[in-house]
Image 1 (tube, helix red, strand yellow):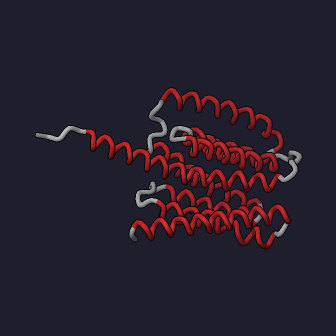
Image 2: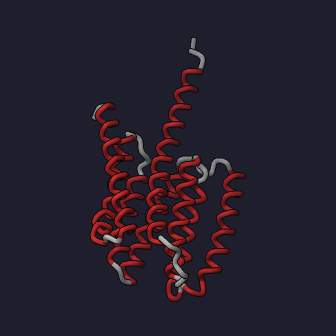
Image 3: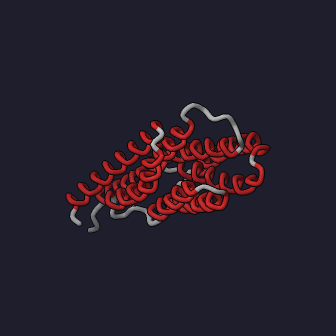
Length: 232
């Protein structure tokens, strides 16, 4: 696929992702359950296809992270404890992919920043788990384990650029809103809409952010290569 065709394909897929996201969020706002269930499984595959079309050198773990997220989206729609736990496991696999990918991209190269961000998220995690713990019942251990992976994504994503950092924070917020439901907290107005809007934004920012990081790194490499003196 030549560059012009690749750009057009990526733009078309991004438009499809945006339209499907808008349709899904609109269905939540208006209570159209059928449209919600039809659009949700299409979100992450569209984003994965767009990411692969946008960059020939997309990280190998980006597509698996989005595919695993698709599995989580589908399973959480099924309902029931078994499907919920399986969906949580699928999202856990997505976070393992994200954390590994960000580390491979150099997210921990600034050790001081990583420690400060890690301490901040660790404090937030401990505080939130302390508040949620009494209401989680049999889900205490699974939620605690999953939330550690989620926080790890937030920490490592902050090490690349503002896009991935914001994406990791929004992913944490989205899943924290789900956790408050599990713990029986009173829901905020538009609770489901907030869960999905922050989730969709998070995934887009994580995907587009890591691609932007790769492009920036490649550009710096090209500049450094041109700046080297010619060998006599």
